[in-house]
Length: 180
Length: 384
Image 1 (cartoon, chains in turn orange, blue):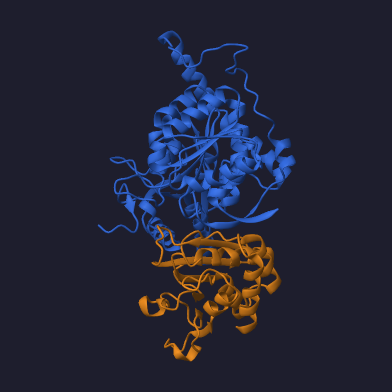
Image 2: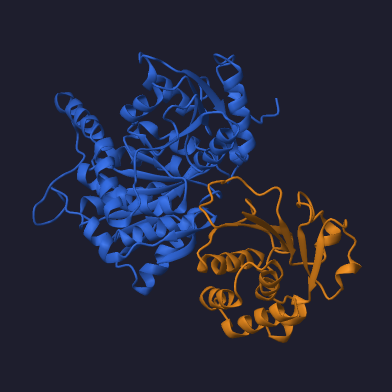
């Protein structure tokens, strides 16, 4: 079983990112569980979303405390909160950032990856310049780095699950997949 | 067809596939997502139903009752304070034998205000005469709505399909959505023996003098007693058509166990994982997950637990001044049985505090260490 925690801010589509990833994983016959933070969401405030995936039915219904990997949709959170809380040794940290991975100071036991999902989202005209919608780009990178599903499954999940600009979102995910 | 859907929408799909004809609802958290999707289905023609927006949950149930008397299959959903506001109408539904099916998302009662899960909202309605099903996965939620209509309409008793807030209501899982024609074959249209119609006028729910009232209650109880066998029969039929058995209880490795957890809701699935972990350590544990709570599945619970030396009941609820409700019920079911297990009562997870594998490990440690419970209620994870 693999457990992933997403960090974002309310309004960025973090919960949708986890749902798209869940859809893509389910397309390949996996069992998945995806849930938002149990509470109330506010625009701009830190939010969480979680995914469990396994080849067999998932009976554990408790929350995720020790994720295998974390995904940081909003890079300002790296300074604001402890995004490594509970993260397992040798877990991956995937950050939406134009910086290089080595520019982030994390213990050596973690593997850091970066993808400039904001730039990709803006170039594919997803959201606005001030509030780009980066979720499909970041999931493209996550799928590549964690080798969770085939790109085709993600593309199909985006086409079915994203309400607007499906093709722009698909292209953003593919670009992030290729760059990651 | 498999889809990744949240528990709220599993209720919506269940109502849609059951071809609910009247849906009445008051839009308040969390029920918006249940009826939000249903309102979209009504608007785009996916579901041929009348959607009635009302000004309170009390009116939502009242609207369902009127429609049910007119012969319509009805659905609504609510939670916590909303369910409490319906209380008077819940008695009307059961006492008047109107087979409404309702989704209840288990949320803690205010004050303090809470949107998180516990079972006190639905268990406070225990004695209203409704059938209560507690579900542990989104698949079970969808399947149980369909089964609930079958059971309710056969006996003319309403049903509540209950799921934990967030842990199911807002959690996405893979759900097999049954084909409509197969559901139609399983669940024929609602055809009540009496109905409100201008062609054949009747009055319902009128003044009932002492010479008749008691017989109405006797008949309701007698029909309630038929529910367990009917759940068994309809659950087996469901399995034949859809491959998933829907029983009164879920017996996981209880036979020959030294310790059995008695659980419900999502905690009932987490307990299963701990049973596997304990067995890997050589402890013969089992998990009896209660799905049907009203009527209480006496026969199956007695048959399973009378062979077990120790029983640990988990309650995500409390009856103040007494114990957890499931603990009371299990003790009452086992009274006078021979042999009789040592029964331990644990309370955990009130107001949405998480119930984890650790919770069940603590429960197992306590139950294995003590011959008898040292306290009437053992609280897990409370700051005393």
